[in-house]
Length: 474
Image (cartoon, rainbow, N blue to C red; front, top):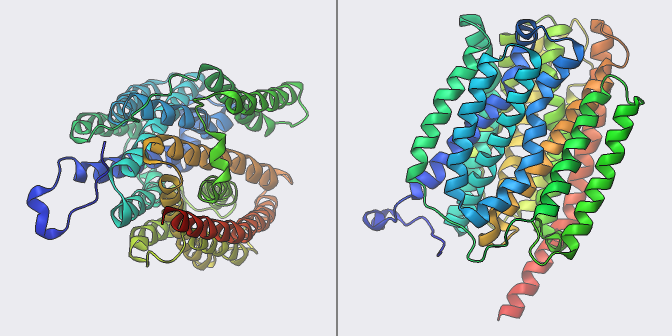
């Protein structure tokens, strides 16, 4: 299938069908997916109360969707490349609607957690196929603009999700959000008919050994991380960590020997792919993990209401949306790797600027740091989306998107656990929580700064690789 670039205004009449949908629907799906991903941040107390959830169950209420996301993203991307990205997109929308019904009707925390895990799988289908559709449909400057819009939806979804969920909870009940998600998911599924279908010219087939070892390894790792918040030396946690190491090592061994692997390990020799995956992992660890805990800190230690805390968090996520949306206007000659490094550096600076939180801190004290963090996140999200589709051949756009998002949400799950452990290590008093969160800010800043530093040599390698490729092609 021939890739398409957006035609200019003088040729709108000959515009191939599906181009508008190929931008709008992946963006809408990403917006919905991230709103749903972040909704429990603002409604945890009401949700846990309604489900009679204890301490461990509350952890699962927050973390379960990450398990489904991280475990399914790479597999869904590979399946979409083989069987059709539009088809998998529609299936993802239908599954999100079905699982949202399960969450809305859940009688207890166990049923709700199962529903959220399935929501994660459905969201994985929407994210991986959406970015894959963009990568296959567009090229050149049109692809950069479309990827920038997709990246902007990440920030907008994170901004709107907690606010919408908190408002709906005040209006009626925490379950209302999930009924809204049902309606939106069904609308996405119906609209998917407008998408252009695309798939790889040559199917690689089902990589069953790779699928089993990857899903098993990621699931064991994230389950261990979730349970570890109640005790890292428990035998069950240690057994899960050991299983994760064995299964992920087996995944690497399996993929290195297959002629048609689910994840082509040769991609890790590409600087752009390393930037895409490594930058996404650092973003999850150092930014998403921190911000996912900030609302809880503001509610429990700074005595803000859930809705007010969500509005403060929107300073970050709203700025992220605005910057990612405008990133397409940056000159194409500016390397994506350098811009990604700049975004991570700004995130590090912003986290250092927020140091010094205490129970008496006003939300105004956090606003400058959150604004700078939003600029950094928006720039990073736009560049990560561009790198995800540029770092792989067009026929493997789903694989590139799946790998990028797997790294992002695995990093986010690990980051949430890390920040939670640091924040609560000293106790549950407001002073102990803010002291712990200050330490988490420092650790996250170091991670982001390290990512910014490592982006420099990788970008140099990428530039050298591009120059060499141009010379050889001539």
